[in-house]
Structures are given as structure tokens and as C-alpha cells.
Image (tube, rainbow, N blue to C red; front, side, top):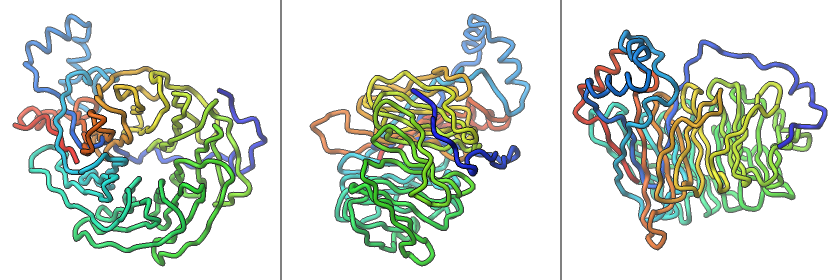
Length: 402
């Protein structure tokens, strides 16, 4: 892997403003849907285990209260998951709304589903089916500022903006089979990529096309930075294009990987972005200097999906390998692996809690059923009050499959 060897434009050299006081949260999803959560363990057994592993002082620090808890990944191993099914065929995409209370999934069965979820597990999970597309729903995303508006991109050449409460939608017809979609962080625009390697920028208020860009090479997942002035494009050539103010003819090209770049995720603290590649690596980039600072190397197959948790402390990524790897962002160390029985298509952290949802192919390759799973963990960073509520909650491990 090499760094960007081009002369950087001035807009990429200027440091971007930071917001150290802003709090972010995250979660991730699976084809079908299930939640991962800590098992309620006997306190005596837990203390004995901590003593044996040399973590007695850490336990005392946790029990004293406060928000910061435990070493990275220390409590990630006591997790279980349950699965529930809803889609008739495999799920390609999952995403949380801005409040972390609703999870959407898109499937090749031509539908999307929205699940209303209590992150603490106190109420039953409810869902609504969004029907109208006539082909595979390949990706979806939520309005960053509206918890009930979700956008879907489908192979039927249309984009639909749904009201997740009523199931009604607005339709925008485009020219190609849509496979990628993302919102600008202020909610004013949507970017859509199709199989013909054409990008379309839509104005959400007028539902009109404001810009188009056609590339002569493969374009994959796309993303805006938090300020909305930089746009990132992953390409099949192994480089990342960074575009200022949607000036697509003047990109900065970062030589990122030795094979095609497939997926991208933005750090909620606006420090990094991560790129997954067909070379089985995930690269982590500094957003100000545009330098690769480390790679995550646990996978052996092309990386399909990547996501940061809400604090920016952990990153989850997956492929056709039989697990999802969770790593510490700052150290690069793998802290936990979630076993999977099928290839993963999408992982997504909840924006408010340490909840991970993930979606993938059916474990039986001959079956057409779709499943989404989610993993819940309050052990990574929560207050004493929060831990008490989890301990006394009858349902402390739960899941939903779409």
C-alpha cells in the first residue's frame, strides 16, 4: 500500500475544524436481523475470572461508576445473538436512523423493511414493510436529520424517499440500475451511483437532478465528509477520489490498495475514513493529511462492508470469511470476532449505542430466505446507572432478523 503521491490541492492541505465536544454513537446490522448482547453472568464467577486474568483493578474502576470502562474488547466475548426472519430473499443493506431507534433493511425481494427497536429491549420489536420497487433494493440510507425518512436505491432505476411511519413514498426516476446511495450530512442532497458508473446528485427538496458525473472506470461506494464540502469515491482501480465541492473533473486521487476499493465508512468524530478493498485489507486514513495510518488485516476475502461505532473507538468489517472482525481504531488490534454462517453484505453501528447490526447471505446457499442480525453490548462504555438497568432487565440478549 502506498500513500497519495500527487500534489494535494490547497483545499486538502487546510485543516478542517474539529468538534471535540460533539458526541456520536453507532451500531451495525446483518442479512436477516439479530442483536448481540452481554450474557448476565454471576458476579462471583466474573470476579474470579477477572482475578485470574489480572483485571481486578480494572473491575474496581468500573464498579466505581463513570463513563469510561474496561480495556478495549474486554467484555465483547460474553455475547449471544438471536435471529428473526422477514425478508423472502437475501438482504443487501442495513442502516439505522439518526436516533438509533429504527433499523431499515433492503432486500433482493424488492422490498425494504423498517424495524422500530427499543435499544434497551423493554418493548416488542415492530416492523413495517415498504413495497413499491420492482427490482432488488441494493442500498438504503436515512435522512441524517429526520428519524422517519429513509431513501432506497433499487435496480428498477428509481430512488424512493419513504415515510417510515405511513409507508408512503416519493419516487425519482433515474437512468440506470442503482446500487449505491448516501445522504449529505445536512440532509439537503442525496448522491446515487449506478451500475453504469454514473453518479447523480439530487436535491431533496425539489427532487431534481443538480449534477451528474460519468466515469470510464468502476465506481463503488461513496460518502460525504461531515462539513459537506468533500466527496469520497471508491473505485475499481484501487484508488480513492476526493472531490471538492462536487468538481468531479478535478479530484485528488489516493493510491490506496492493490485491488479495487469496494466500501467506505466515515469516522463519527471526523478524524478518519476507512476503505475496504478486494485485496482483503481495510485501510484507515487521516482526513486532514490524507495519509494511510494503518491497515486491518484479519480477513482473507474481499472486504464487503465496514463501519465505525458511535464513539469512533471501534471498527467492524466483514467479507465472505466466516466472521465479523471488530478492531480498536487507534491500535489496530482485533478485539473480538463475531462468528457468521454466511458471507456478510452489510454491517452498521447504531448512532447512539454500542449496537451492531449486520446482514448477509443465507447460511444455506440454496435457500432464498433473508435474515438480519444485530448485536447489543452495553459493556464498552456506559454509566453505573446504565449498567444497573441492563442487569435488572429481563431481556438482556435479543435479536431481530428481517
